[in-house]
Image (cartoon, helix red, strand yellow):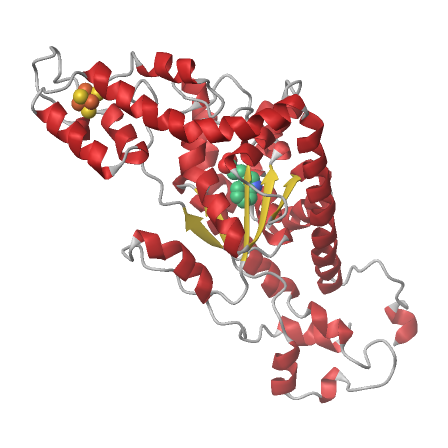
Length: 408
Ligand code: TRP
Ligand code: SF4
């Protein structure tokens, strides 16, 4: 056994200061950038499962945020196609076209491959190796406790989710995040538990294997330099570094975006407005949208606060228009159809430029594919670095090493 292996077993206190959670009550506009600025290491990573065409909920809930982040931070955004397999392993016929459809929407909405690294998870097989290594040390109890595990199994009764892969979903997600040593992970509320388990896995890994860089100490390999046994604790601490930083979730300050039936917008509910829906389709979908049930007749007043159409106005309309909606609705001065046509105008105005940019990729899908491939090559290079460090810290580097029995 090497001296450094003995020393790390002593579990010396950590050098790195804990990063603070930003209080939930800080002003929304400031929360995200401030929080990032406080961190020493600022790398943003997020992914989406390839569900095909995205809806406007994806846009205001995640994509818009990613697009803002790419301007200021080093960002990695990827298509989590392996994660899609955890629930849809039986029929994989649509995976590839879903990847492209989603990529069209990403690029059309404004994700820029010159600013961010945009890639496909399965094109970076390093994720699989890290997933395997992390799976060795992840206690089953941690996985069984993740709320999405039970919830999804309940909700997706028609699928058999009693699989190894599905239980390991958060381990794979941890590998995605830790691979790039992301400091911040923009996600929705439902994914916070996955970032939390990533932090726990990182901590566990660092406890077991911190000190990987010690092996670069002069003398360890070449017979010269300082021997660790003669090293003071202070010097040792100065050499010590965690392999993985603990990532923070970056909660998207997303307003609730209802679908046309008033429930949360979701493809599986059939209540969504797609980013790629043409104007006529947007208007057709909005016409029968549910409204404040108090407005039975045209003459009944209502409240935009009790109406999903009102929620859409709050997201897509100007303050002046919203004031007009409140005034008209509460006095029965406007009809719901008119109100819906106003929100349709504003949604269409957002979608038009996106659809304009989407056309280029629809006509030449290979353009999007090439962007994803180039991004994947960049991601592989970053992933290789982390994996080398991981292997090294575990004493499992690929390089030749004299067997200990001979060396001692
Ligand atoms: N689980 C995420 C979702 O369903 C997708 C995802 C996979 C992800 N790996 C990730 C998100 C890593 C953030 C970071 O939305
Ligand atoms: Fe909803 Fe508009 Fe009708 Fe009011 S007028 S109930 S906000 S659709």
